[in-house]
Image (cartoon, rainbow, N blue to C red; front, side, top):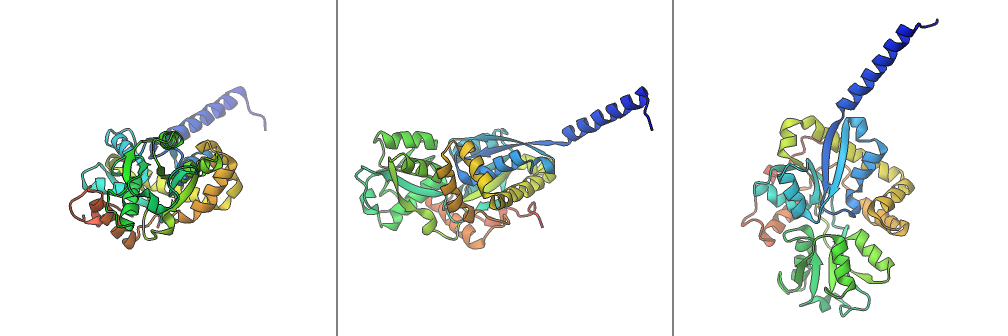
Length: 319
């Protein structure tokens, strides 16, 4: 049956209206990463590129920061809706930060290592006493892990000097110019320094600490109050993105290499090392929460252990 010009025009207009409505239905979510190159935060990019967030009605805008402190500042200033940060950042919820932990992103801290210069003075862990390791920011996950390393050798919290240098790139530059003796940082930087023949791995924190949440997903109180369905949609999209990464190894490695600006070999090592630490449900482990509570006190973030049940919720996770 033929259609006249008026009918075709009507159908065209209806199609345009439907497309416009679908576009308007996309809710913009601003996602912040504590560090740009951290492989554990790649699911945000994977979900955005594969349409897994869009499928759930979300338009994801991703930005990166020089550590958890900068990320927290952005969230407090209402520049970020969802924050992908370190576990110890949970303490700032108790200190009044306008956010709530909504999912356990990753568990054992396999994403963090100590790398030292190949030709430097540090040959074993015992050589770290009195030496300087860099971290991102004070009060961060890497800061606490550096202190834990010092404590494990009986040197107290300050047996190893700690320099806060911000981004992984700034820390790598400082190591290359002998301004520091080592870095506590994420694996992309560690593996790249190894690949360049500059550094070697001295400590793998994932081998030492098991009950932990190395990374956590935080949602701003504003987003929780104004659009709880968007929080649910984001977490559903995040978990679907992690599953996509498990099911599509080669595609994920290619994507991670491009997004993190590392070689395919570094991205492949990241995949092998870190896929096992992703939390597949987003649910919190009581023992891991206990370890985090202890870290708050050791970092001097809180004077006493808080009521951890008030710092997180599992209400937005898929049932």
